[in-house]
Image 1 (cartoon, rainbow, N blue to C red):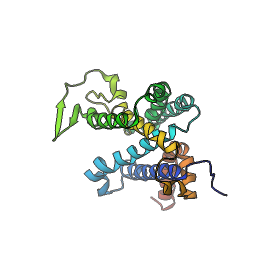
Image 2 (image 1 turned 90 degrees about the vertical axis):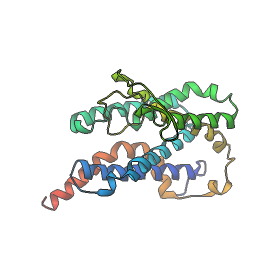
Image 3 (image 1 turned 45 degrees about the vertical axis):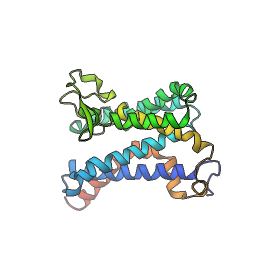
Image 4 (image 1 turned 135 degrees about the horizontal axis):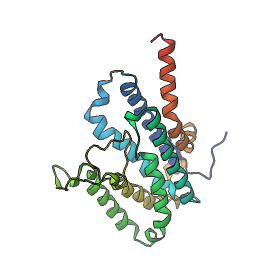
Length: 250
């Protein structure tokens, strides 16, 4: 099959790589937390503080760029948010100790819905200043779920303890909150909107021209199906691991 020349291949490839990295992380999560396999690297600071936010952040940034190519972000956002709610119900029933209360599907769906209302105003802003402001807001709120504004150890303000339990979609977390996958609106909405601003130039093909000529068909195919791969990969991974252990007599 020949690549679709109307698509921007490097975007599909980047999204495909990002979702594969997230699938790899969730496979390790299942091995460690569901099947009790020891993987020392999984608990390292490099994975928790670097790899996980980089994998998820890359996917969110690329998705923000790709939103500029969506014909109906409102409808797609409602669909993705509904899938997030199904994920909450499924984890609550199957693995309540690893419930997903507000994961990346919840976030992505709500971000698309918000973008559908915000983009007329965003389009009136100067591109570079708006992108810089969104980047700074992302950095300033990155540690908000830990009750900090700013960057601890550099310049930060400790916020009062959150006592309202239902503010977690905003990044305001009360004691005892848990979600095995958690991507709140702050800081991640700012990164998504930053991607949407970058998407204006990408769609106009103003980026490095070598990127537009880059084609990796198999990775592009993954990227075009990234949503359904993300929705289905966890039960498939758990099923494959269980079947392997069963066949191995364990």
